[in-house]
Length: 494
Ligand code: ACM
Ligand code: ZN
Image (cartoon, rainbow, N blue to C red):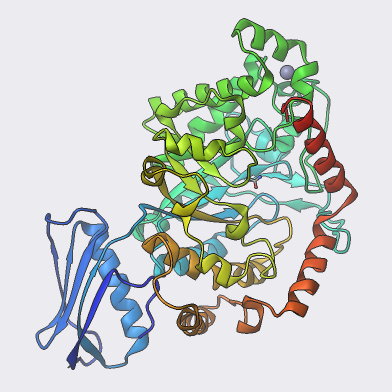
């Protein structure tokens, strides 16, 4: 029997329940469960019974039933399932800035993720190469920020056509509603203070130098970031948050915080004055202060902020109202953060970034990942892990077919790990189940990858790595890498 994720407890009984078109399902909410996503599913001669801790629990019982119906036609085996997730945060992330995905494409991805009980959709809507949200108060963010002159993300496949896309508010509302019908919360990401060239292109005055620029056409890390010494920057930030919060009504709001080089701040009289006025020691602390200010603003709206682990470098992040998403770091600050009882979402680039080729993050590697086994994590730290998330960054994912290929079946493994805390059955068996659901996704017009891609033989792995290297190793990315290394050496201001 193919089920993803594997239920916590499954007892197969002898006998089958037969039905004509649809089985009769009796549902009941029971308050005796510990977690609100828990459910029990019983199938016997009298039919199908789902007891859930809440509507959400019932929904997960129905989801399991849906998977069972893929396995059997016209009948269901007698069984008893008692199921609850290890993690309340089971996330997938889509980057619609670098390459844009239409509402229908986003909905297809949501359909697939809902089928495997993922429940947090992190929507990366703003970045250097495109601001994809329809803004009213600062309309140039959309008019200017959503258009780039060309797309030059790799050395091999550059496109000199204008790239112009954004989501209207009505479209985003539709996506949020679609998610809510599937018990998926939506977490918008407004990435600040770095990765903001598209905002600065619209309003150059919110950068340190105030120089005219345009949305980036290449990938990378850019020094031109938001100026924190100017009031107008905060007017824009709060306006974006206000308008996003009208659409995105769930608890979490991601405020980015990754890859923000401090060079311009160091040279900026406004930023220097702000740092001194606040009595801060360095510019990493200034970023920590910025994230705290924004988190406070969000808290007034009843929201919890999330930021990338880069924002921990200042050591002054306010843990009250902040969760950290760990993607990459050298110094274990995220583990210390969690060990102090603060909320952590694990999205380590290896193995959880699905924009990396299968040769780097294989299906098996994701499947065998144990989020609570991060080096140095104490028991308190383990209990502070909210869950995991797997991002699909889209510099090198240009369209829906490529997206589906990269995400599936790897997001099956993410779903398994998120629900169970780690894999519960042998990998070979999981591969069989993955094949089963890849075929179902194909019927849903979601072209998952072929089995021959999932783990790669040594030859394929080397080929994949060379191909990946060729795509990501542009002169700019090498310069970025060297600059970051140098900055780490001269006092960690990067
Ligand atoms: C990231 O990958 N820059 C969070
Ligand atoms: Zn400045």
